[in-house]
Every structure is written in C-alpha cells, then in structure tokens.
Length: 146
Image (cartoon, rainbow, N blue to C red):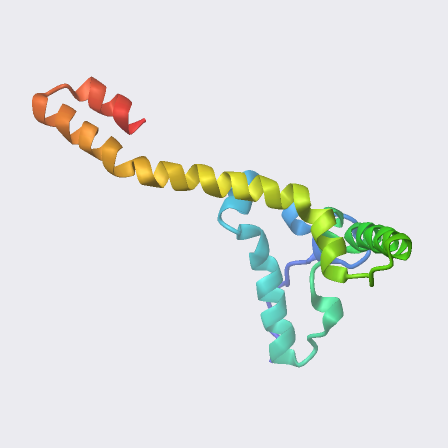
C-alpha cells in the first residue's frame, strides 16, 4: 500500500549523474556510511514493490571504474605477448599481472616487514612503559607509549 507522506528523491543516485552519493557526502557521512541510507531506503521500497532492478543501484565513482585498469592490463598483456614472441616462451596472464603489480607488491611487502618488526618490539615497549609507571615517571612512560 503506498504511503501518503512525500517520498524523498534520490536525485544523486540517478544513473545519468557523473558523481556518486559517496563523493558528494561530507566526511562525517563517509565515516559513518550515512550516505548509503537514502539508497537503502529506496531499495527496500523497490524490493517490497517488486520493482527493484539494476537501474535502481547507485552509480560508482568514476575513479573506481574498471575501464582504465582493463586498458592498462591489455597494454601489459600486449607487451607480454611481444616479449614472448622474442624469447620463444608462451604468454602468461600471471606473469603480465605480476609485472604490472610489482611496485604494489614491493610496497606491501615492505609494509608487512615494518609492522612485523613493530609487533616484535611491542613486549619491549610495554616493559619499558610499565617500568616507568612503577617508578612514577609518567612523562617517560607516555614517551614510550608514543
């Protein structure tokens, strides 16, 4: 049964728009995912009415589009095919993707090593903090915690 109260418009969710509701929302709305509530309410109404479709979904931000990524992967695959023609190897999707993502993998490996070292140092830092708190030197304890 349709309600008598006016419905809120989902103007920012229209497929013709170029910016998404997430991009147009403020930092507090992004932090607590408040930008998604109008979409959720409209989706719930559409599902109950039986009119939910792919057009009901909000648009993705252009920066999250897979188009540029597909083009970059296609370039790396072309380069892999050309390289394999010269070396006599068979082309490999995995090898092309690893060549594309090698910078990302190196960055993440360095981050993992750094956080592993910090994790190993945690007992030492806590021991020093507890020692300072027992001696009453709260300032030095805060420095160890920082």
